[in-house]
Image 1 (spheres, helix red, strand yellow):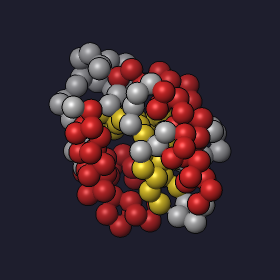
Image 2: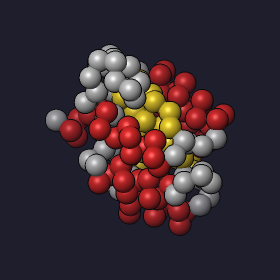
Image 3: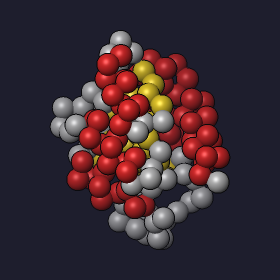
Length: 135
């Protein structure tokens, strides 16, 4: 995990560190706020290079599947192959993409609406399940 003052987000706080891969500033900001409310320490990146650079220092990954700047499925595969639990976020009606995300290694795929309605509780539940599975 990250050392105190690491380049990817500062000292460890005891809270789970979660990298958010999203190229949309508004959506990245919303995910950041919801993860903070869920008790996590988020780190935002907007590219696969940023994801790769952060994987050694985080506990989990959230991937926005609707991005145009990167391949969301490829991002899930990278994070999952690094042993990080992945939550994917996408459109509720894109069932094919949701299935591909699960096949690529996402532990869950939530619709944006689900996170708009009860994001902190949903994210806290996911983080709790991933922490329990890691024990």
